[in-house]
Length: 129
View 1 (tube, rainbow, N blue to C red):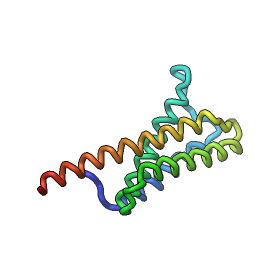
View 2: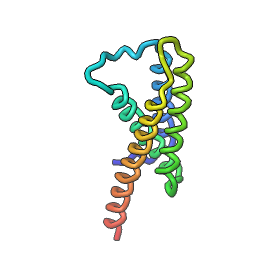
View 3: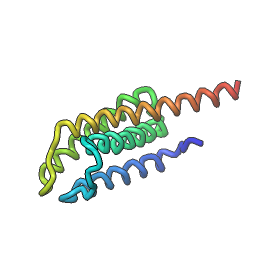
View 4: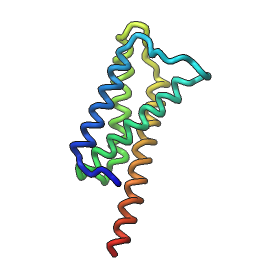
């Protein structure tokens, strides 16, 4: 079942962005290093969720034509602000590669949701016919 309420989508999106901001405000991420480039993978996953949530928010609000592009760009823009924010947090640093992974994740999450949503809607449409 796909959630269609824009209020739920936008609330979940805002809550998740607030969680990212809060975690970015900590001097130390508190996550041990298990393998090289772990932080890049975590950025990719974290922002895939951002892209997915923004795409869901846009689509549920009736903005579906450019949802993939808009969600990817908005997620990427939030990634820039997150990296700038970290520049001012003691013990954290701003990283261009982190932003690249944020952007890739945003587009991947948006693509995943728009693709899945599109498939789901097309199946429902075929049932009606």
